[in-house]
Image (cartoon, rainbow, N blue to C red; front, side):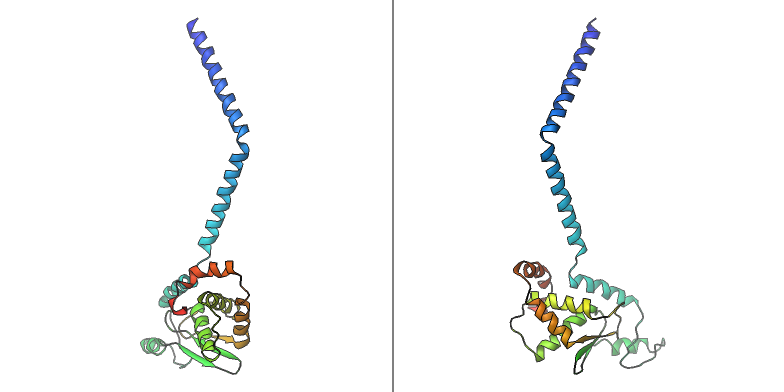
Length: 198
């Protein structure tokens, strides 16, 4: 008899606990759903920010790949035989720049990627066409714009030449001046990684 009363009492307590949990869940459902949404949004932002890397990080990964690949210096027209490989590496270890009437042509040296070539093209352009209104953040935007719109596809190896039209550079400069404060602030985290732009 005592066991039966004890079991009934336990069942009532369990049922009471379940009802209280159910009531609490119903009362707090909006808060729980709001918290889950905030967590999902924060996770999405974190994931997106991890995918968006700075240009410097991209270049270093390209540089590692370039060190492992064979290279040919297009400017010197040296054939890539095993005996000439060390001479090629020495000959192309210095980046070259060439200017035509309508464009700047940058040739990659060891460790150069598309972003570095775009950076050099911008520096060459600004040397002859100074613009004191451009900040490091503007320049980060411009070099990324040039990299994306140069028309070059594929890897950049030692001796690879990329042509940047002067009109494209002017367009990039113009677009950079239309950036709002929030966009410039976002670019600041990349600009501090490139002291040469300061």
